[in-house]
Length: 486
Image 1 (cartoon, rainbow, N blue to C red):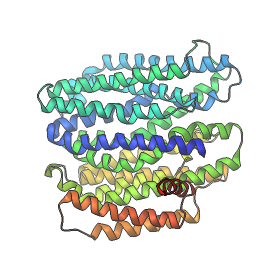
Image 2: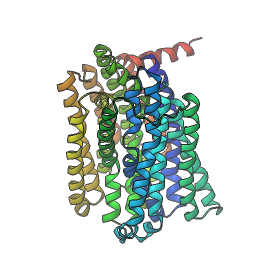
Image 3: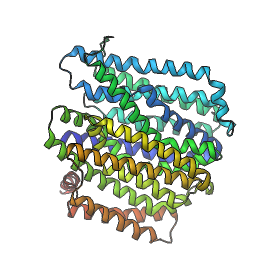
């Protein structure tokens, strides 16, 4: 786990720095510098782009990670990478023609929120830049280099957004110019990661397909379905909220989703390096090492994300005091959204195991079924319960989907992530969340957040250390303590 822990730590620090910048944008700058309607518009455009980009990428970013290490000749490796460069462009051209032909019909869909109509075409532009960004990010992972790519994914665009919002505040940019500038930021991010990836692994174009082309196409198509399912489950609710409710509701719900997504940071950071290593372990049939990594990644992610979950739930009321009243949301909605992210972390590297094993087809079929459930639940619950209905639909869909993943890995590979420490950590999370949520300090909101977070962190880390919930975390704390000892 040495290279995993090293790069995971760097990725996590980078990701958290990006999330801090993002939190400033989402919780303070966007709400104060843009109207709720335009904030909702930006949230919707990015969510819709996230829904579409897997179609353009068609799974090739995962395909090159899975197959590259299995090839024994440079010729096949060059063919695979050339395929990854060309295929998204082909799909993008096809979708572009489709969008041009049916543009008026697409605009008619947004007749309830006319503010969206002039910017619909930007969804396509952002989507294709994200698709190619993921390809070049995966390209760098082939050399087990994920830190710079993670910086570009988590930090670069958020810092640029901060600058753009400041320009809006000082009247150097109009809101409309801000939206177009935001699209340019996504394009620039892709160009930078492309240069970095080519420096690590210079491309040698070979337009022939590798010898196992049928396996590549089949895997890419199935991973495309998996990616579509995963991203649709993440952003379907926000896109459907736009259709059924006034667009400002998208920004209110989007803030809650962003707050909950902070819990996913440890998993996002660790998965950058876990994915290629898991693929290598499976390709080389190292089952014992894979089992150890599965359990270690699960408990480590649960410990770290559990602390974040507790801090969010216990401080949420104080946090909303710092924001405009129109963005406040029910605590039950946030609890459901945070529960989704905590369960995701509990899965450890199960996603990487499934996507790189011979059993990924099963989860794809189940994923489509769960996506259909999510669509039906959103269709039914949003008009009835509003934002709470969207949260219930998302929680139900993700709980089913993640549960299916655990069952399939266990049934097919006889692997599971659970140990006694898993349940001990869950008890700690539950007790601290319950106690400190109802413990209120008669202090200004920011002071209350700092004081409560400090108390929770000290108790949580002390229990984690002395009960040795995670060997990796214990070793990290020991190294820090040794450095502090004169």
